[in-house]
Every structure is written in structure tokens, then in C-alpha cells.
Length: 359
Image 1 (tube, helix red, strand yellow):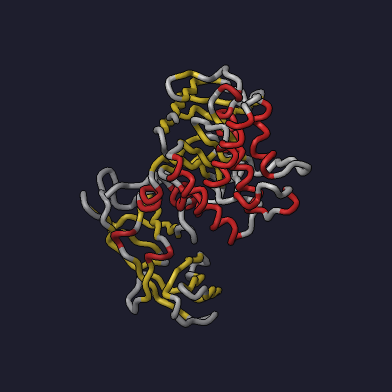
Image 2: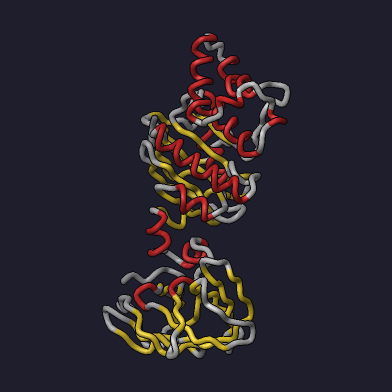
């Protein structure tokens, strides 16, 4: 297995630059997830690592070897696509071992690798079936098995669970996580689903417009987002943003006010911030509480009772909406007025450039 090093990686199509100088270090054995909205460049970056897209500029190293001009088959990587791409006329056994046959791997060695992959993925009982006889989750396991038998240095996954229903996606997430633990392999996984990113990753790379916005652990990105984009993208339901004005403060806290919010003191460094500055306050739905003297008062416009939690949409006096996550037993109705407050130590404050002000 091997780590990867990306130095000022760029990709252009004509005059359009889609990957804009990515610097990234991936350690041996890490599970790294590229996440971001559609069109952010995450799949393009993965395909550049695989060798399926040319690198316009920069240097890509796998292990100690620069691989910019190396053919995909010689890079020591194996890729699992969103499409299973199985041969319908072949059995699972033959689908998993097809690449080994092309390499003229001896039959006994090929058989041992196929059966070991089947054991790891718990699909020994499926080896004689054809793809048409398999569920979506089983087909995806076959595609992963085809990658395992190659014994690559790096596994690449391009939105492999997008075609599965919610229940199967959860099952496959657990299987991929277990596979990572069992193999100790370096894995890079692309998804637009931030829940997948949070549950699978050792390290998340958030991309937007071909630019890395932040790299960090799932909880680091959740609790200490670098900017407004990361704060709004990571977390479900997403963070609420309120325009506020600085009334005063010092090096340890700021007093913030808004037409829709009672003045609040938030523990954040006021260095470089002065009274009258316009900032953005971010509060996650799960950090709100029902309070008689809460900072916000709003009218309930939507209630989603999910059993373990109740998601409430509150309309404020200026027409802005807050998403509030309350206890599952909370009873409220559309048209009702609720007062909610938040935990100041959990709030985030962003400057006019959208950068997170640190505590």
C-alpha cells in the first residue's frame, strides 16, 4: 500500500480551469473522502489520480513515484465506479477474476485470489450466479471484489453507492468501512452525500469550484468549519445563518445584535472586529433549545416528526426561516409561535469574507 502526494494539481479543458491548484497529502492506510456539490471537480480529481484524465499541471506521486505520465494499469490503483460494469454473460466468479485472466495469472493463483475476495466480502455463495440474479448491493460487492483481487496500492471509489436505495447504502457503507479495516488499504472515495463522508472518512476534503475549501476530520469540519461554504455543506439539516451587527466586544467575546434576534454574547475573538461591523452568525439546528427568553421568536411553518427528533421550520419577522431540531416528543403545530435560544459556545461567527472567526 502507499500514500499519495498532490502538488499544485491543475486541470483545464481549453480555457476552462476545473481543478485549480490542489495541494493534498494522503497518508498510507487513510480513508479519504472527496466531497462537494455537483460540478465541484471531485470526480475529475479522482480520475486524474487513476490516470483516466491527463494532468494539465502539477505533480502527482503515489508512494515515492511520480506518476503524471504513467498509464492507469501501471499506477497500482483500482477503481470502483458508480456503474457496476459487470459482464452479464459471466458468473460472479468470472467477473471478479476477469482482470486476472487478461494478465494471464496462473489458474491456481487466480482461484485463490477470487475466493479470498469472496470471503472478505461474504459472497462465497454468489460465485456461480450471473449479475441478473443479484441485488444492487450484491452487484456492487462484485465490483469491489474485482478491485480487491488486483491487490492495488490505492483503492478509488467514484460514488459507488449512488444507485442503491437508502437501506442498502447504509449496509454498503458498513461493508466498505469494514473492508478498509480488514485490508488496511489507502482508499479515496468520492461522494456528494455528506452523510457518507461523515460516516466513512478518516479525513474529508471539501471541494468547491475546483478549489479545496478545507481538509480535516469529520468532527473538525463539523465543529470548526473554515468558512461559510463548509459550514453550510457539512451537517444535515444544514447550519442556519443570521446576519448580525457587532455592538461591542473584546478578545474573548462579541456582543451581536440583529432585528430578528435579541442581543447575544458569543465567545469568539473580537480581534480586528469593531462595533458596527456586519458579520454572519451560524447556528446548527441541534444547538437550539426551547426557551421562554430565547433569542428568536418565530411562527411554525413546517413540522417533521421523525420519532427520535422533531424538525421545525420557523419563520422570523423578516421572512427568514430557521431550521430547528428538537426532541422527538416535542409537540407543536403549524401557526404556533415558538421562542428558541441557542448555546453560545456552539455558535460560529464568520467575517464579511465568509471566514470563520476562531475562539
